[in-house]
Amino acid sequence: MNTPFRIIAKLDIKDISIIKGINFEGMRKIGEAKKFAKYYFKENIDELIINDVNASLFSRNTALNFLKSSCEKIFIPITLQGGFRSLKNISDAIRNGADKVSINTGAVKNKNLIPEASKKYGNQAIVVSIDAKKVGKKKWEVYVDKGRERTGLDVCRWINYVQKSGAGEIHLNSIDKDGTETGFDIDLVKTVSKICKIPIIIGGGLGKLIHLNPILKIKSINGISISSAIHYKKLQILEIKNYIKKKRIIRDK
Image (cartoon, rainbow, N blue to C red; front, top):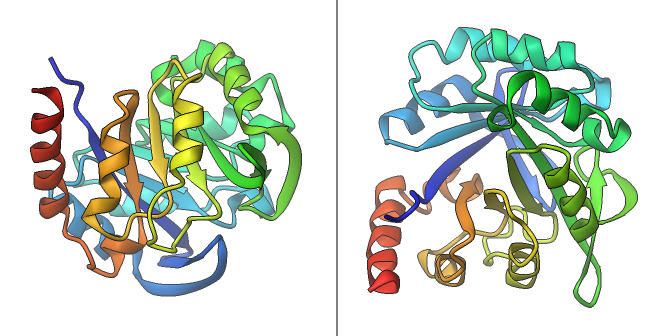
């Protein structure tokens, strides 16, 4: 039986607006977050990631109000990302309706946060978001604070640590490919897929349906997160799902 391949809409929010840039820079408002969330739900997106882009910078999560007020009638899994530095932050998110939390900067700053959170809430609720930037041949570094800060951490070593520490899923974002719509960083994806033993969601680069082909050949990839391509309606959710269904049938024959 095939594992469902998930299509996830990633909403980078600032206050009440969706914002988007390229390579994590040049962010600009493109619409009201509430309308985007409702639209994607009606279009049968599998999941939503709500990312408060200022949360890590200001050590807070202003997306809680959005989660409470805007998602009461959205009945799909919602992951909240941004500003998780403590178990209390995580408790607040889950109490207000988040199915999962995605930890990025907080996990790097506090190495005990992942094991403590997974023990308390279960690893199915703990996603670790990794923003990767290429720094050499077959080498990527972990960046935090929305791509503003280098950590010196090798992506593969960090993945080994977080999966051993109790993370239930990894959301891998390519900074180099973010918002470019030029295709995924396939070298990064292939490298990570060889060592990762927990579900992986890939983000950064989708612009055309054919960009999905190399991703769908890697059976350990569990889904993709999409922003620009669907925000700007260059691709429709239904056509993405139909394309993936067709390609997976061919692959598994």
